[in-house]
Image 1 (cartoon, rainbow over the protein chains, first blue to last red):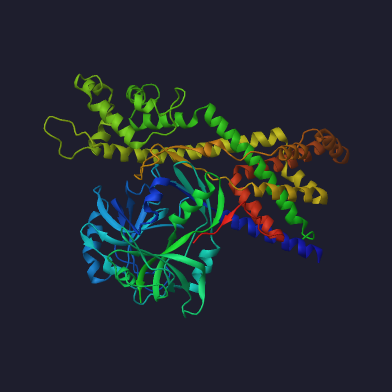
Image 2 (image 1 turned 180 degrees about the vertical axis):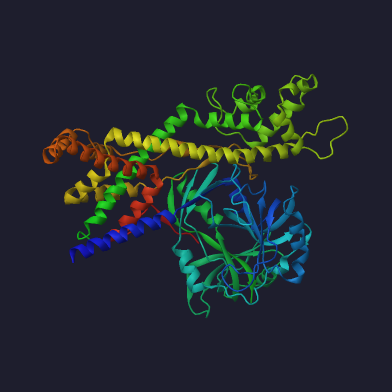
Length: 307
Length: 319
């Protein structure tokens, strides 16, 4: 009996130790003024050098098979290796932009890419510092990155705002699965006078299908709308997230058009992608100064489509 | 959870490795600063980039002596980091400035560098002129080279850390096998280590930050410094005392004598040496995994002990 318990404990410790070898934390260090600039913006416009692009969009099913077209590169406007993704890239209206991307792959010339900025520890590097030299590795369409332009809304003159719609035949993650996970996630934050360091474990759940009930009138910002809303589960009966969350609507999209005349109490079924809420991060930093602290992950949802 | 002493032994070991790794990190930073490891590797990287050798590096000297680059270092030392636009501007100025017209600088350009510049430069240079690459092209070339240098630096520091871990282990006689045995046999020591582990976890794992020269501009620029070198995690006085009491060379002669009495003179000394060697190697390898690793492992073991997650100093919620 005693030796069984000993062996059990020993096996547990070995398993726990092995899991520690794979479950590490990841850091990204941002310039505070840059974070402040984008905290209340839905999107970013970046002059991007495209290193690699998918030959064709992802298939559509569930999880990572989301119909997106990925392309990776760098930009002085971002200062981090990043990936941009066109949602619904197989739609006929997006083909001109898709061709632009393919034509620019491997070129040193800048391509102006606009879309929702997205900071999320989905494919992170151990440490990345904005503006410093960050290795572009692995050198393919999916380098280690915590920053994305996702979804893309425009490439050069080709608008792809019409791609911001529900993804046909795609099964997103449900609110009951994704939001409790987001609410449980933690972010460690520490600021200097000009920079902010963020540390997190890897984060998941890209596309989530959920309901929202607006608690305020949508607020117009320079490049779209931001609205506070309750997050509802699929059947709309229960709140799936702990309190209100910011919903981000990029200008020129069908989702933004639907939301701009909405009022508090209105309900919508949406497809969204999570990102770190920089406004929330900055509010916490304002309170804590340069002390290090742990916080419940401040996140908000980029709305891709409204049913 | 007193019925699972092995978890407490694991906590004691993880805490010990964490504290020793913190000492090792401090030693590593001290070595890096005293030897100006980053600055020296940067010079070597630039020398290699410019196609020069250690014995003959005139262009490297000219570039590095430029005021913009000198200004990046402290106390007349080489900087540990050069922003790629600054290097690109310096190199272009050096190669296209007034001295070049007189041929003074041109003679410094090695054949390798000339070939690299040709490859980076315009495919169709103006007649009679060299194809001089743009600053952006030079900056990118420099960045790629710094990628490789960064990998080399990491490999070098890993080796130095392992050597420092070994030295520290030997100096303190930090033998994992002896410590495990002590922890296994003494419930009091285990309880003490668990309490110390709680205190250590409450300190939080330090997160490095960076500073930027133009804090109010939202444009992305290179950071000017990082506090990661300051190693904000210091050992508490109680932790220093604890390490001093756990590890010492004082009792070793008695241990050897006891083993010799049991196994004979030579075999007894041999048993001691083998056990010590294995214990030291385990300790040194464990220390070289680094403080962050052991901090998280300790946190994991503490949670496993069902003491609950040790609360962070502040856990904020924001919508």
